[in-house]
Image (cartoon, rainbow, N blue to C red; front, side, top):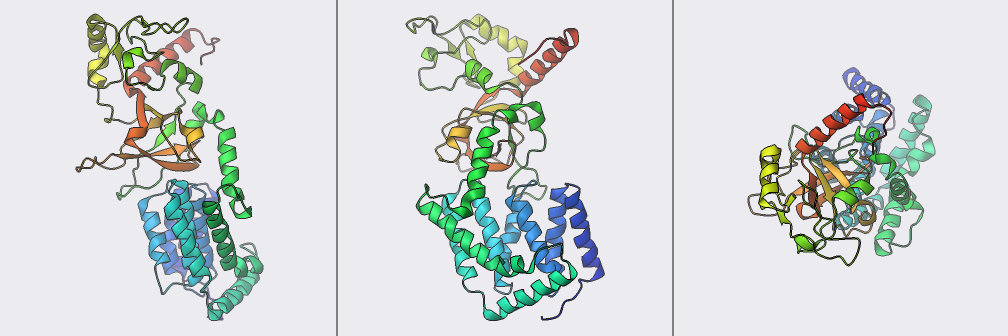
Length: 395
């Protein structure tokens, strides 16, 4: 173990390919290559630790779509008693950050405790191996990391894990180890409005999916309208008496249910479509007009979402995301898993503020505000208007 060795040519080529993909920004492909390469690299090779570090970095920073297979790889390594202890600690640390990003504080805290227990059990023999391997890396690959960074890595995991555990016990005490987490929250709040632009609709990452095809549900910040426009046209339902909720209007003629200018007097009793529960009509005539005009093709139950539907998030209680997420509009990107047969609610994956962070959303916290067919129709009309009057500015 005290000597430095090169990995076999085939493994070295695999490793170099992963590096090239990462440099090109193709992080998902790079991550797959690193995961494939890691178990093949000899423990005496300089690429052994760096391969795992690259895997951890890509996953922790959500630089690509993250799937169940990736978490399974880390979990297997974390529980592998034959693996180096500092590798197991790295895997547990990465999984702890993932759990925190999901909003699962309890699981994250448990994993941080695992990091602490692993880091405190690194043997003198293994620590001496770290020193020797660190010297070899400094000699042969100085650009990777310094000897001190290599040797201190287990202590780094231990320190960060303890500081994060302190945060769970006292949320107000943001210590140095949580600077990154704290900055992420602040940055996303500041960038919230900017990320509602069409440019922000691209490059959003998924999170876990349990199927091998690696297709996951993703709700994306909607570039379709500004938040203010959504708030005006699609208010959150705060009362069970829908026909007396301020702001609702007939979807055909536009007549208001309530006079908002004066005493909130009820002007009209609106009826909602009893199939989709998202359309309101003042009369049977308006309902028939809407049905013939195309609502018949798009009418779906509130829980029957399809790709490109727009939904509003509400009712989140997580202190980290409630202020940023509640009331915001996102785009459905497809089903995560088949609907449970036991009647349990479906959970959806959404990207937060441009996809840098993800969150699990229960079905009860999602309200559809626009069918995809309506979006396409609106965008077609908007395109026609832009062609006929390119100087006009649209919201």
